[in-house]
Image (spheres, helix red, strand yellow):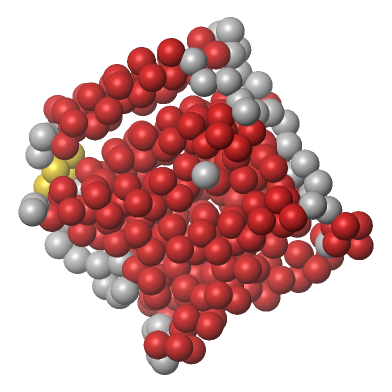
Length: 292
């Protein structure tokens, strides 16, 4: 199996986990504040990451590695969760999933600018085609208008792309499991403090399903999912594997239907097919990767 194909398959497992993030966040913000959800999930991941670090007896990474991790922390530990959770407090998770379909092209741009990956013109065309399908779908669903929720999600996608690309590149130098473990562990003091300040006593009285969604965000969306995602990016390359993320909006739609009873229409499947086509086309295009 080619490394690009293997990377895409491994990355897809992470994307399925991430596809549940918006529906679970939507459930959580029905009873918890966005601050508690976003920083609380990072606190759970941080504690889990510390346990894993102690279990494998991993040494403290050198300062040059920690500096690279600061972008991961700002991107996918703090920036993306906070903006995305606030967006879920304003609208449906299905709509949010479509808007976040912009993340693959943003991740590709970061990979090109920071890590000297050189996608071919055909690859760019396939990526832009897939992103255009997502944008057209979003505009159709929103009757041609973008809301404050959309802008929150656009901003979240930028933070996410930075964290994804930096984490994928750093995973060429160290274990992907340690990349995310150290990122959440190093930010644990800040996340733990904000979570404590945002906690309200009435949270102890909410239903089990809300706590289950919150715990899923901490253990899986914020931690386990990155085991697969960063491994896929490091094996197959940031530019190519990031295209698998174009499937995430439609995975989110399915989960939104199953867990939140949000409407699933024929148009969803039509655009899902178009996006899958763009991924298959992009997979056949050459991407020159820089050596780490």
